[in-house]
Amino acid sequence: MIDTESIANELKTALPGCGIEFVANPSPSAQSSLLIQGTDLVAVAQWLKDHSEYRFDYLSNVTGVDHLEKTIKEKVKKTQVVDGEEQEVEETVEQTIPGYLEVVYHLYSMPLRHGPLILRARTGNRSNDVALPSLTPIWRSAEFQEREIFDLYGVTFDGHPDLRRLLMWDEFEDHPMRKDYVEPDDYEYEPTPHGPVLERANAHQTPPSTDAPSETQSD
Amino acid sequence: MKTSPEPPSGETGADPAPVLPSPQDPPYTLRSRRDGDRNLSGDLLEISMGPHHPSTHGVFQMDVTLDGETVVQLKPVFGYLHRNHEKIAENTSYLASMPYTDRLDYFNSMTSNWAYAISVETLAGIEVTERAEYIRVIVSELTRLLNHTCLIGFLVMDMGALGTPLMYAFREREKILDLFESLSGSRMMCNYLRFGGCRCDLPPQWLDQAREVISDFEAFLDSFEKLLTENEILMARTQHVGVLEADLAINAGITGPMLRACGVNYDLRKVDRYGIYDRFDFKVPLGATGDVYDRYMVRILEMRESLKILEKALRDIPEGPIVHPKAKLRGFRPKPGEAYGRIEGPKGELGFYLISDGKPQPYRYRVRPPSLINLTILEDMCLGHSVADVVVILGSVDIVLGEVDR
Image (tube, rainbow over all chains, first blue to last red; front, side, top):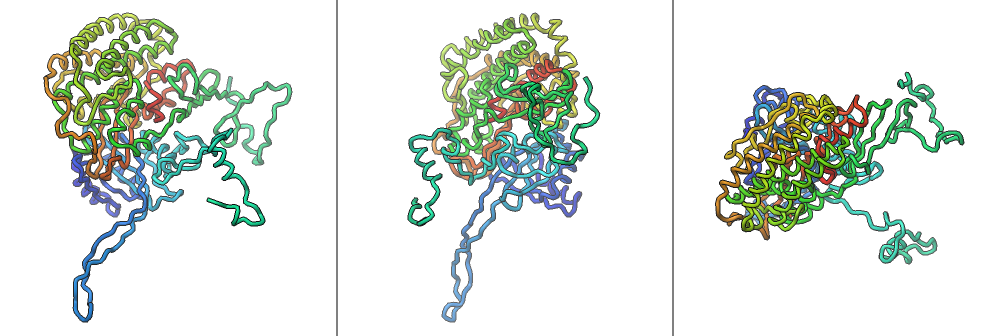
């Protein structure tokens, strides 16, 4: 097992100005990770691969993770002046953490037989045009796995030599592994709808009447 | 045939008009399916191998561009068996995904079970009982035997040996599957391991039956090798075919027998020493040139090492409980956190990456599929070879489409 925290400190001195943050893991596995700023990812990866003491030459696993927008309620104690007297009052503060997409890399070293070192990089938001630098030029094992994340999560990898959908077909538009993905209704793919599917298809496809549009529409 | 010096529409700049076949043209057109300009030199032929092709081992497609009979480009196309396994697993409990991991690599359900179990055990800090550890080693080494024999059977079938070797391999496989059936109730979809142990204890006389199968297997391997190892056709078809350099293999994340055939000594049973593999004495066979013949030979030698492990495990297996008393099956909610667990599957490094947010379902469930990642360098290995060699090279990679497409 390698010491992720000491690698983080070494990285901070070797590559000053890079956004590197240590992320602890509270679970029994204790596999802590390094949160790398997206723009510095390639430099950090290259350093880890070339460093003679670490030699992370094997990128095992690349994972996409979707984090939805979260609101955290926290109770904060405040001193307030009530009727001329200072009193401690508890107040609930709502804090909104914007959603983001995350890519997690598991690195190992084959000659030195250590690992895993876990890197994570986050996008700013979870819209459809988010990008991270591709690590395929450094480790080729990322080629298909980054294509899969592009396919299922919608993260664009800048510098990937052949970024296409991997599992879904090329004409498909959505990203199925996102947490807010809604499956298409049956009628969209049913060539000969019947029964309840036909009813839904009719309800969907009948154009609203031009005379009284508000009355014909029903839920 | 030679490639024409320049592509036909290079300098016109204007939108090329759609080419309609005139009456004297053949009723098919030869053009690239994926290039935006849809132009292909007339001397190059693009064929689509698969998804329904007897040698693609399932619904797998390769878009191969040929110059004469030589491969100049090969693009694998995936997704015909995609069912979004990971999304389904994120909507069910941890335990409910265990039978579903059988369907990933349907040849080796026991090792898929173990990879998933070891990840959940790392995530939640569950310990495994002594007897269960031995059972796990026994079933996973039996799985390695049946995977490697059948793979070699398929490989030589791809070279044209239509029946005999494959039927010999299937005969041996069936003996092992009988063992699995008496153990778990199912031949292939075993669903046998549980977090902290195994589902049920060994039936009476199972160990004796297993010993019998293994002692027969040694003799079978000898006769199998007599048929194949020095066979002139097999040597001619596989030596110096599909050579893979060690540097490229490491860089591309190739694992398993594919990697060791390139001469890289990296076996997770030795590196991680997961389970109780530190108690067994076995060698890691390595190849020298990294061609298809080395991959064949590494697998044969690996089976011989597996037999050694099995002999010792069947001798030393202790009595005792099969599930750790503290392991919780129902209402299982690991603490928030994440874990990556991996084992040396017959096809390579099979890993599961799990993120828990304290709920009964995993927040993120990711399979690291060795079959898919081993295909990264398929094009590099095939370039310059003929179509018949592509079939052999693909056979030597050892893929199962249930795991590639998930």
